[in-house]
Length: 134
Image (cartoon, rainbow, N blue to C red; front, top):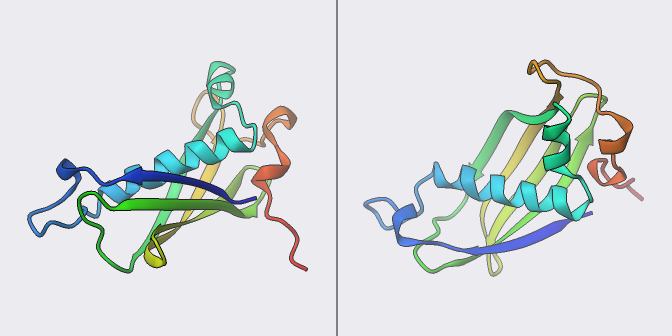
């Protein structure tokens, strides 16, 4: 499953060169991952209320082209790998046909003390797993 969402670059997200500051891409990717979780039916607020969390353990970003004010960006997110307590979500940011950035985000499911724990069945949804290659 691939989740797609869009956003428009705002002036305050840009640096002195007029490009989106590299740190703002983390916010874009976070927004898109939350939309991904909603799309697959993952009830993130309920998981938090139950004492769990989904922590980012690693982010790898390759910047390809700059984005600028008023660009409409499409962010695509999909599961790349799933283990018992963690996984990787692949993401790409595009402006039209141009690839702006691509990322792999490693996440871990944690308990109330912040320790990695096996994803309980009610949150271990099929959408977290990559689709089989054919």
